Image 1: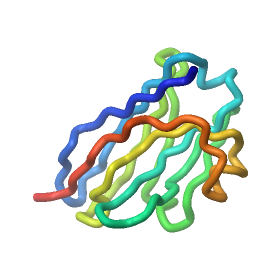
Image 2 (image 1 turned 90 degrees about the vertical axis):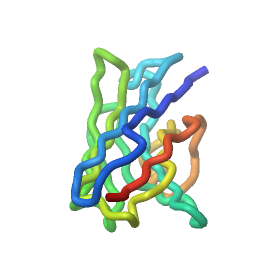
Image 3 (image 1 turned 180 degrees about the vertical axis):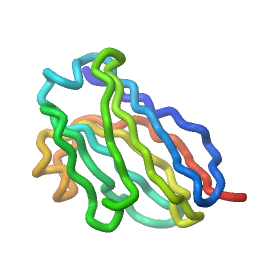
Image 4 (image 1 turned 45 degrees about the vertical axis):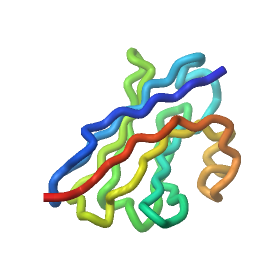
Length: 125
């Protein structure tokens, strides 16, 4: 069974770049066939899909976040990373790493087989 564990700084200042890491266990990020997504949930709001990295390394982003978002992977560590630049307090949220059945499914907001527990990120000076 695939397990995902997010990690991050917890607190970043406005205008900085946040970096989060998702460590995957129970399966390789390059051979399990999953599409590895980042999804966030701001306080009191619904889930927001941010982007995905496919098995072949190709990436796709939410149009609203595309200019500030970068998703990458470290195959030697079996990790997926998220960078979000120029953060504001609006980026305060719980950030989740998730394994979806395909890029098409996760872009439409469904098809998630596994979720991490999430990591809380606060943007404040």
